[in-house]
Length: 104
Image (tube, rainbow, N blue to C red):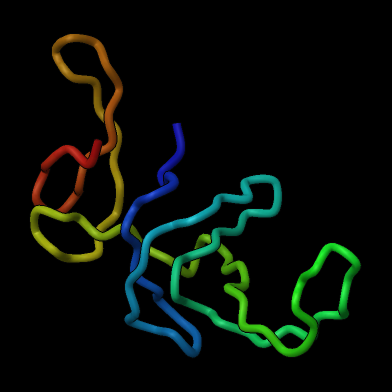
């Protein structure tokens, strides 16, 4: 079970977008990176293709290393570390270390 999941709300801990929040759009576990919606926007020069894509300079979301983001607990509205525990019915869940509420 991973600490970060797609659609988690995270806060950026360092870099030019420090303090900004967004949802995880994509996880890249083999590279240890995440793409966060609306964060780490870079400009990319695109070449014209036959399939009708627009040529020119476009803005895209670049991946961040996952050590630079922290999960935001929706109950206490703070960034937090993630813990794991088993509920009484035997299901393993993630929980907020700050307020002890389940994240899943």
